[in-house]
Picture 1 (cartoon, one colour):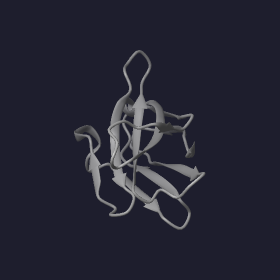
Picture 2 (cartoon, one colour):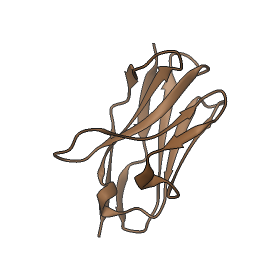
Picture 3 (cartoon, one colour):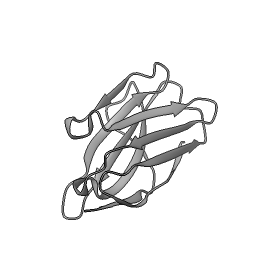
Picture 4 (cartoon, one colour):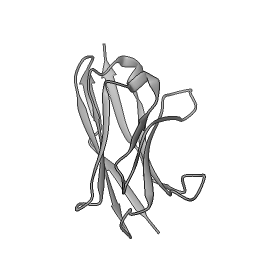
Length: 119
């Protein structure tokens, strides 16, 4: 079992930055992929970015490319999402999730952290 706890959300003005953290416990994330998702009010949850824990290979959805950076600290078993040049449309609850690379679906989720970007 993997437990995930997000932190770092808050209120920021447009153009500002926030760094979200996702601390994993229960086991190390070797052979896992960590993903970040977000859900805005009235909208479906959407994928933001992921990182393969062993290789560090990353992937981003187009709206955040060049603004967000996903990373991980193996020693701390913690993933991060650095969010720069934030826009009001980035406002959402952000969730981290984890899955084994060999599986299709994310089966471990955090509780979410609110990010609000004011115009």
